[in-house]
Image 1 (cartoon, rainbow, N blue to C red):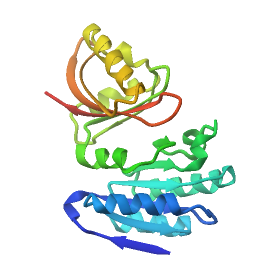
Image 2 (tube, rainbow, N blue to C red):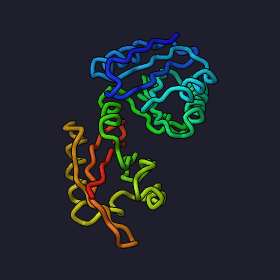
Image 3 (cartoon, rainbow, N blue to C red):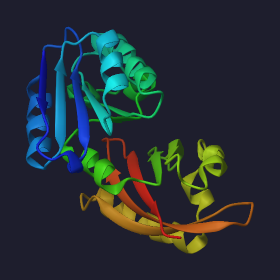
Image 4 (cartoon, helix red, strand yellow):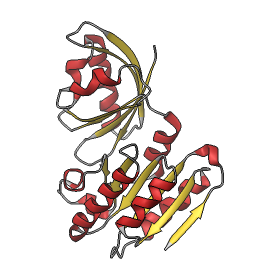
Length: 232
C-alpha cells in the first residue's frame, strides 16, 4: 500500500517504510503526517516487498528513508529492506530505523545496517537532515566514540575523514572545543536539546577547521547525531 504527498518539492522528500508483516503502523503514519505539515514530501510504503522498494529508490530521489519496526522478529526483514534501499540508491540514501523496538536493549543499528537507530523517531531529526544539507554527519556513541561518519560527496575533505570512525570525538577536537563540547552535551542530556556547537577540529596532520554542529540525542543510552556545516 502506497501513499504519496508532495506539498512543497523544495522542502525535501522522505520515504517512510513499514516492512512486510509489521502490524504496528500508527506511529509511522503519524510521523508522515507531521512531516507533511512541515512542507516535506512523504511517500509512505506499507508492506511493500524489498525488491519493489529497491526499484522505487532507483527511479525516484529521496533525501532519506525511515523504517518503523516494533518487534525483534522483524529485524531480519528490516535488514533486507535497508540493503535494498542502499543498493537501489547506489549507497547515497540515509536510512534510519525507529519504532517501539528501540526501547529494548538491542543493537538495532548493527543488526539492520541502518545509518541511525533512534527510540524517538520524531520529525525533528529528519527535518534537520533535510534542512541542514550537512557537510559532515557524525553518529557518536555514549562513550564519545565516533560510530559512523558521513560526508557530503562534494565536500573537499571527503577522503580525509575516513579514518575518523572508531576514534574518540575529543581526540579530533582542539582543547577549547573539547570543553565546549562537554558543556553542550550536558545541556543535551539534561533535555535542553537539540543544541548548537561551533567546534574546531584538529588532527595529528596539523590541519584544522571549524564546523557548526546541530546535535541531537537519538537514544536513551546517550548516543547523539551531529549534523555539521563547514564554516570555512
